[in-house]
Length: 240
Ligand code: G3P
Ligand code: MG
Image 1 (spheres, helix red, strand yellow):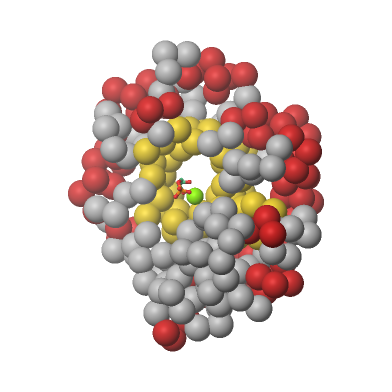
Image 2: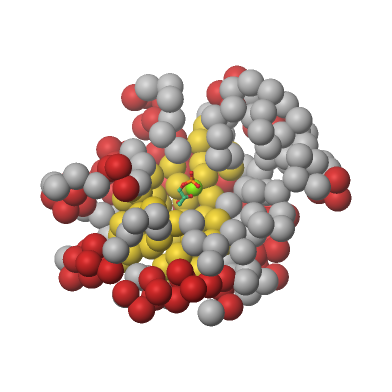
């Protein structure tokens, strides 16, 4: 089973910072997960929220700040004083870290809220960065916006994609959605997930990666059901 350090090692480090990704490697993770969207200048950066308020010393929309402004932001102090000055990283910085430290990543494309052109720009900018990965590095692109995944797969079929689902998104026709977008994996919320659903998806040929699992007992159960991976904030869970 793959353990993805969710937003880096986010139980003990500020989420989606280089400190959190380095800590994940130090703790023995070989995979991480991160969230990617475009800054005002068109640079892909790592941030979960569209607003900067929760995790940085800036406020307002990500879309109104450049990567340069984000590089001098403080995305660490909100978590703990010792992380003061940790910037909002670019995707390029994570790619460098992956190459240097042998880390693999699930890149989650956020559902960009600025329309079609900007969304396609996000897809292209991510492909441009992924193409810098060195041989041996693995990557999996996911999104709640399945149209973005279809577009990425059309432009760069060499990359594996995972369709994100909440429980509410599970429609009777979800297997046909997976087929239409040419998905390789399903990334599904742990709450309410049953053995039958995991087995149905595995039988249909999809990897099943489950978020967010912070209990060792639940991770064990999911592994026994045939799940291929779990996203976790904690290094403890990865010790099952
Ligand atoms: O990719 C799994 C998980 O990260 C999806 O939800 O909101 O934590 O990005 P969220
Ligand atoms: Mg995410």
